[in-house]
Image (cartoon, rainbow, N blue to C red; front, side, top):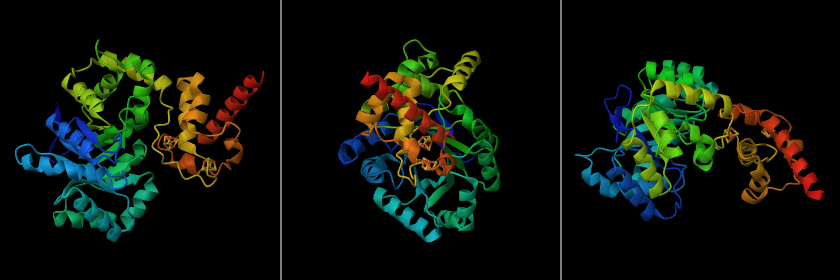
Length: 370
Ligand code: SF4
Ligand code: SF4
């Protein structure tokens, strides 16, 4: 395992972090706790969860019981979050997280889900940052961090406005261009950088053949290649991999253990190829999932990904995978209020894509009637 220092904190973290949001069967606390413990044994020391990730904090709590016996000689670090708008609710969140995981403190506590600058300003004005400073003085949290889906310049402004110890943001071979400025700013300001969605929300392993060009070693998988592309970037501290099972864990650990620096010429070629072809994909983060017209946007944008990556499968994806009706005209229901596009972490033209999906569905239905 490779370890890197998180900003200016002096804490050394494994370049692969354990993301606790994608457990295969989150009801099975015992199996998942054992997966967390396997990660710890393999050298992973950063464990990320959140109060709204199903049973994730309970799973971590179960795993930590055993891991705490070894913590003095083999440290591990816990990250969780609050998206609350007022200090008393944030305290309630923190106390619940501590109690669920049976911890005395949280190492990296995040102001969660800053989608836009006005949301950051509102939380700040509501006293969230002052509240976190108080939690820190009480010894309940060690480091104050932020989790965001904003673009580069807005990230830089926020990091200059408040001395967060580090930042959590979505970054992968698929969307690196979109967040490049933010990563650069965080690095320059000496903040820790934890990357979520390093596998594009599952798109990269699902479309391995399309990302084959990202491979730089003969025997590596596309997942290993995508993670190594990130590990190669020394501005990044941790790539947070959502672990569902032991196979995911083994592949992520292999990516770090078998890492060799990638020559800059190869990185340049990969970046150019990706920039041209893959910067427009939905990562399934669901921040748009609150349409006043009840349109299932994340599902439909996933269908659009399939239109881009594997056009033959889009109708099956829409009807069989998501159970949506081919007859339903979602584009016609859309009032173009703009809410989803404003919240979209990838800044996708959602309204336009709804129309394109409709065109394709009509084409598909007409071809079936012939
Ligand atoms: S623009 Fe259309 S799809 Fe987006 S939230 Fe508004 S009505 Fe829904
Ligand atoms: S459309 Fe945008 S906000 Fe919605 S799930 Fe996809 S990437 Fe996320």
